[in-house]
Image (cartoon, rainbow, N blue to C red; front, side):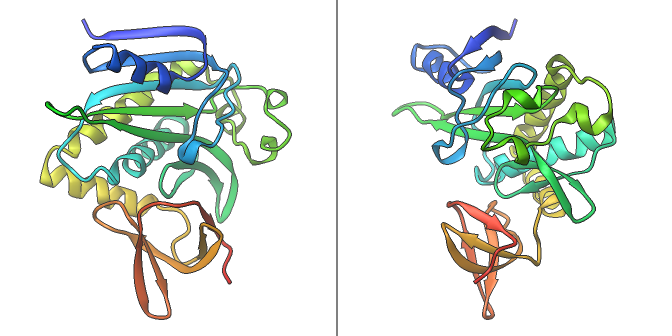
Length: 246
């Protein structure tokens, strides 16, 4: 039977999953925590993780498709499934942020995806896919520096949404995206869905603090396509701020 390990508190589900892999554990398995004391986001940013959020990490074998599509693809699958199941509007800010939106207005960050790759010298690589979703935490439990930028699903739908209700939705988004990226047709479908749900197309963007141009779309390898003065660049890493130009 596939392993699922749950904790009340962990420093990080991602770190725990990686520790277990280094100790010889075999994927697939899932680590879940009610609260994280040292949650980690992309570029080693701290991820606030109070009780009431969903925090999990899923260890899986690496699919054949482009790894750059994984975070935006999982985010897009979550966006699609949350829209269908909870009637909320969301969009995906490249490469891994799930935003709650109302028309053109961003209501806040609803969740995020983090992907770590472990590649042994011999044997296939393993991915650890971390997800954090603000299911029903209390706003008062977030730091003052981020509370105004947070979206909470329970506030959007008008009822408590416990993390346990979101866990199968999140795991299904991971499974469907990883599975799709194992085939050419599936990879194309992930790219097309991600392209549709990409936030900020046509808007100016700054990359690592510098004006980069306007968002054009999403490359087939998961890169962010940015146009400036008629030239198109492929952004594969960096801190981006949408809506701010030169």
